[in-house]
Image (cartoon, rainbow, N blue to C red; front, top):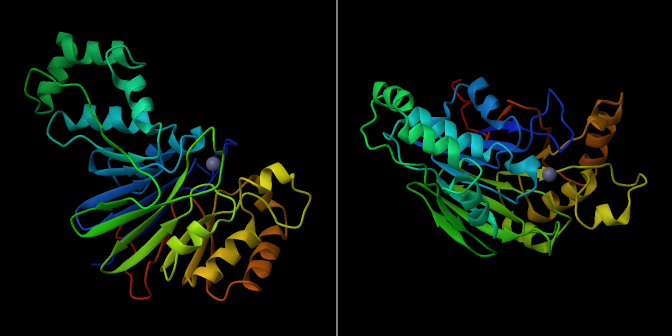
Length: 296
Ligand SMILES: [Zn+2]
């Protein structure tokens, strides 16, 4: 079965109406896997016809807010609408995800009073029971697994592997993911400077979603190039890894400048032989040549 890929959020920390924070949806059989959950991701899910309750797995690349701000919103709305009838969300991410989850959802956490009210107050219990829930109401308990370089997560008909990337260490840990399924493979770089681990992870992949935060060659602070990638970095990694399609994501408003997008693609195409896609929110990207477009 060919997995289906939908770009939900292709933006950066800069708030833009047309680019939500980083988030990508892969539908694989009955599973709906979300990679990152930046600001606006949940609304984008609704826009492409997927309810938060349908999301089964979340993979976070790192804990910068442009990649995980909608994590609590996804967990809470999924829990609330799911009314005890769906499993808790399976969450994977680098070190720090368990702490964040605790600080959000534990009794003394950020959402402690809300969760106490929704599990204990009669008005919330009435809504919960009307949705099919059975008392006593349990709190959300995301099933968190912290992953590191070399880890492998087996699914029913897919497998996700993990490589460490180069971003904001030692302050934040960051990883990239590769999803393999019988019908194709997708790699998502997260945020990273060029690194051999990502090139290795992406070997022969059908699709590489790669950060493109700036235009290489223009004046870029070396502190930035040590942690992030530009269009030529992405193209070189795609070429060295031999991927079929490169999707540029994590794009700033710079891409709107007249002619910039064309120049970016032309320069990347001089380095990378495959197909280049400039990411846009809600865009469905075929994973293999025979891949059907998502029905929605
Ligand atoms: Zn970012």
